[in-house]
Length: 385
Figure 1 (cartoon, rainbow, N blue to C red):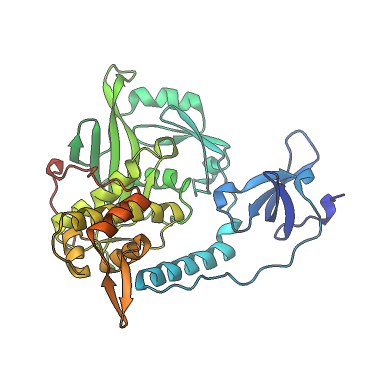
Figure 2 (cartoon, one colour):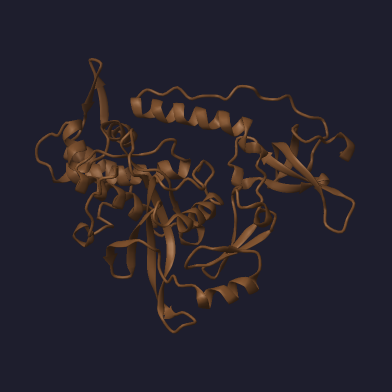
């Protein structure tokens, strides 16, 4: 029988989770409310931190700790883009195992846009708010509150009905605002703290001044308490004003209640449309999460195949890059993933025919149509001193 006295914070044990036995590391322990019994906050090894959970002693299969794992396995990669992703993930993993595991998810849920949403990760809200099990978020200014009554009294007096900044895109109900982190510092800080609840690798919390934020909203049919139409914040991406590495996107998030509806694709596509206006080759900041990599592969694949299907002659990698503003290494990564790259005499060669493209579309059901209407973008690059 498992004993409380033998379970230690920082040690790894076999635990029962979803009808299986997994290795889990205890990060913290606490007393169960109205009881003298303990429960343990456990991270399941090799699984995303959003699955970290509080477990009771009955869920431990054994009180004998497992030997620590000191090495992080790394898959051998070939291309430059994959190598870059590997190095970034190694750095992330090293930080993850040395620092991030100490961050127990501090807020269990939020009330936002009429939804009660379970959170995924730790976010560094001020201590008096970070100890609350549930926070209430104003859907307009993103101010955070501890009580529902505070939210009810705040909303009628809130002067926001959409994000601050400049409206740079509008198509039907969809709108995108460009918000300067230096000019609208508090709003952007609130956004980053909120986003961190759903982003594992995000490090930007309060230092928002070097960034522009592109916030996606949707106009609602119903009216608010003032009898006015209003906009819901769906998601956003941020972008460094001066990126040494030429990144066109730093962080991206679609809030959980709006995921799997095409909004992530829209934001990714929009970031490249801005790159086309700037006439610059762009790329997202590394490392990409698993979900992020899936989203980018989908967009990159669709953008590349759309050009190849319309092209009679052959295009080289650089020509594809110039047409799409996708970085050449990301193009190679995508073509390799789609099975359209061959290596001949130590050189990368495209192996593309109409037949191979059609077969590719059968294997990968990519949406080739554009989500963003470029003619609806009202934006020009700003020079930042």
